[in-house]
View 1 (tube, rainbow, N blue to C red):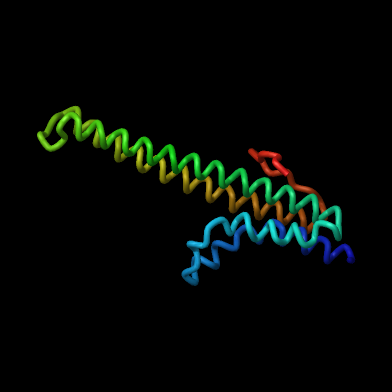
View 2: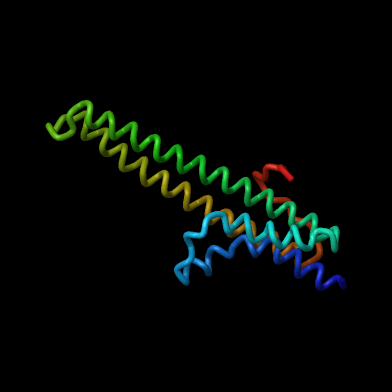
Length: 152
């Protein structure tokens, strides 16, 4: 395998994790864990052919696993907080115009907005650093993702 092919497969290790974007545009965005499966397949089938591909594939897959864990944790936290506030609102009689219930309702709404913002920030961060990693792979260099759990 020549150097250009190596770099192209290393780039594919990173950019394949974004396969959920075009799949979403054609109505297939609900396929779970595409961000893990696509780079995992590229890495699995090409890792023996090149050290560069092996390194980039491992780094990309570790990052996607990390982002999946972070996104899942943020989602669970958001749901738990939402239900806790809902239970408090029911317990203190939100329908009676109770001022505490009104304040809790406002904070609940703000918390929901904050939670969605955090999930959006994770997605944008993921997109940006994947592009940086692909550009580094194009140069033949190595990119180390920030906040990456080294599991593989």
